Amino acid sequence: GAVVSQHPSWVICKSGTSVKIECRSLDFQATTMFWYRQFPKQSLMLMATSNEGSKATYEQGVEKDKFLINHASLTLSTLTVTSAHPEDSSFYICSASGLAGGGAYEQYFGPGTRLTVT
Amino acid sequence: GQQLNQSPQSMFIQEGEDVSMNCTSSSIFNTWLWYKQDPGEGPVLLIALYKAGELTSNGRLTAQFGITRKDSFLNISASIPSDVGIYFCAGTLNDYKLSFGAGTTVTVRA
Image 1: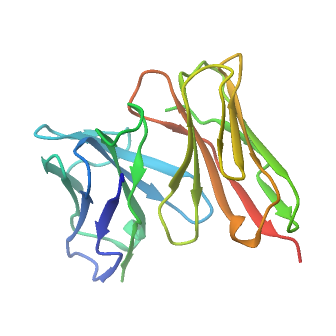
Image 2: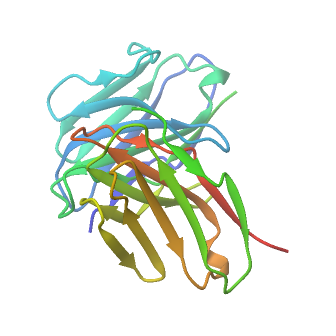
């Protein structure tokens, strides 16, 4: 149980274009989903928290107009990187928290999406 | 969330060895979580702890929630090659946002 998928697993895009990443909880309802960014050999950096049906809460320093988050249902959240630039290249990971049979604060992570902007 | 102090930053294991890593926080938590991340993958939840003093095992892994509620450790017994990876601790006090440690990188000693 508590499986989270992400799509795509990797994507290469040209500078100036937008990229959408999907995060799905496959076997539980995710009341809260999180989006992280991870640089090589570093820990996870929280970008934003989203609850189903409401606007995402962004961490300080994260541009909400650049990283658009939609949490339309209890099983799906999307992150759209708009007008991507090479410095947006990174590993993006989502996680989900909810009625997965675990504790209230357990987060289950997706496999990540490697974004490369050329 | 705040950054947790996780140590060691890296360690080398020899097959069969027992290894240990720990995390400390400047404030108390009511939940400690331990994750393992393989290269190019997302973290996988290994053990969750909810009560001070709690000792929980998952196969060869054992983790404890410190009595002070400000620390936790993870032990791996009889390590095997597939134990290599990055281990992260995470904690929270009644907040869905987790604080993460910087990670402990475990590699096999040549």
